Structures are given as structure tokens and as C-alpha cells.
Length: 356
Ligand SMILES: C[S@@+](CC[C@H](N)C(=O)[O-])C[C@H]1O[C@@H](n2cnc3c(N)ncnc32)[C@H](O)[C@@H]1O
Image (cartoon, rainbow, N blue to C red; front, side):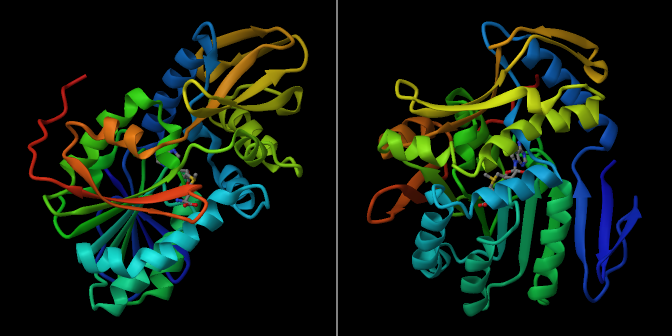
């Protein structure tokens, strides 16, 4: 059963049934209940931490309230060119994108603080197209807060938040038609390249031919610039990286000591991705009761916590084959650091997902 939360003037009501409409309200749904979330997390953490030769933790678990706040801090760092570059591109193209797609529903995957979405909402408002906005994010506290903020700032907009996983829960968006989906900040780069085509097909199933998909991707570039962006001098990215251990501690009753790990981030040229890792600074035993796991880590052992793939137009095109999506616009900044690619849902039929 979906759990429905509804905000009324800032207070959070909890109900299991859809509620009657109120004058000011954003509807927040959980795509899965809390016990299912923890069960999946336990399974992913158990498999990931036991993977060899390199153990891994899914990057989505970097984000809880603290992780989202740290990411927001990263976006303001001088070394982190991505956010200000994408904002500048979006400011330039928002009107043109809205004019081309003429959406009645804007839907952001991995919405975070929900700041950039406003540029598109304003362009929709200017054309009398402002009807619905859907935010989907795994970080529930930030999702509730940003849905509430949008609701207050755009009184004529129906705002819906979905607390869920964009790799699993896209059907919660419902059928497409008049939809413009946003996936910004290079977040698709966090997916291993093998996971990108299935993700894109899953998204295409929620779009109708002609619907739009605005995709923000970080581009392949000078390695020193990439290295600096993921190794900031203030150490905020390091703290963000260690947050994944705090999230595992909270949900799976683990006893990781985040301060006993150092932040590692490097560019892998062959794979065109930045890899973030946590390196143990001493031998230690860690127990993760929620995942029925005990780990003996040696000093120098590493856990991969995030990939951030860097794209080119050909590398995106290669991943789009057979996904029912094609590039219509390729909008970059003058230095070609970042791209906002406008994709369109074609008429190509996408078969239903194979049962797992
Ligand atoms: C890089 S941040 C981007 C935030 C915002 N869109 C922006 O442009 O600044 C990635 C966002 O995606 C969310 N996220 C990461 N993995 C996710 C997943 N598998 N499912 C849903 N949300 C996810 C995080 O909570 C975070 O808000």
C-alpha cells in the first residue's frame, strides 16, 4: 500500500487513504513502506560489502537529511563548477524547451532541494501551462520540504512528491502524456553505464511519444578540473562521502566509525568516470546486524561509494539505442563543461519490463 502524507500549512499529517483536497497542500507518497526500504537496503549492503575484488555501497545511500544538506553545500563550493554551469544553461534554454515540449506536467527525478525546477516552472507559468509538478527522491526529508516550498510559492500548481528510488519506482509516476521529465546535476552519471539503457527504457515507458526529457550531464574534460571538483579544499565532499557509513549505521545498526575512513576520489580515464571511495585508515572489525554481516577490514582496504560518469554526445547516443529516446537539443556552456540535452520520446515501442 502506498502511504500518503499531506502537508497542511507546514504540519505533516499521516494517513493511509487519499485525503480530500485542501486549498494549500502537496501530496507526498512513499513508493514503498519503511520496512521494505530497510529490507532492500540490507540486501544491497550485504551483497555490496562482500563484493570482490572491490566492495561497494550504493551511492543513493549517501543521501539522507545530512547527506542532502552536504550535497547542497558542495553545489556552492568554488571547485564545483557543475551546479552554476547547469543553472546558467537552464536560464538560457528554459523558455525554448518549454515552448518546444509544451508540458502540462513537470517531473524531476532526484529532485534534491528543488531549486532548478523553478526555472522551468516559471517558463511554464509564462505560457499558461502550469498544472502539475512531481518530485521523486530517495531523501524523504528534503523531498517533503521542497514539495512544501513549491506548493507555497506556486499556488496554482498541483505538487506531488514521491519518496522512492528512480531505479525501481518510476511506475509510481503513472502514465505519461504532456510530461517533461528532468534528470539534472549529472545524476545519471552515478549509474554504471550498464544500468543506463534499462533505466532509460523504464523512463520511456512512463512517457508518451512527444514527451520531453531534459537530461543534465557532466562532460569529459580536463582531468585536473575534475579532480579538484571531487577533492575540495574545505573537505565537504569528504564529509559527504563518509555520510554513507552514517546512513548504514542508522538503518542497519552498523558500527562503522566514519572518521576511521579517508576520502578518495580519482578520475578513471578508461571508463571516463570519477570514482569515490572510502579507505580504512586502520585494521578494524565492523558489524552490520541489520544485514547479518561482520567485516574484517585491513588498513588500506577500500569501499567504492560513487561513480560519476562523464559523457560525450557519442557516448550518450550509444546508450540511447533501443530506449525510445532521441536527442533533439544539445545545449552546453561556452567551455563545454556541462550539457543540458533535450531528449524526446519517439514512437518506438518499448516492451514491458522482464520479471526478475
Ligand atoms: C546530485 S543530487 C542532484 C539534486 C538536484 N537535482 C540538483 O540538481 O541539484 C542527486 C539527487 O538524487 C537523489 N537520489 C540519488 N539516488 C537516488 C535514487 N536511486 N532514487 C531516487 N533519488 C536518488 C539524491 O537524494 C539527490 O537529491
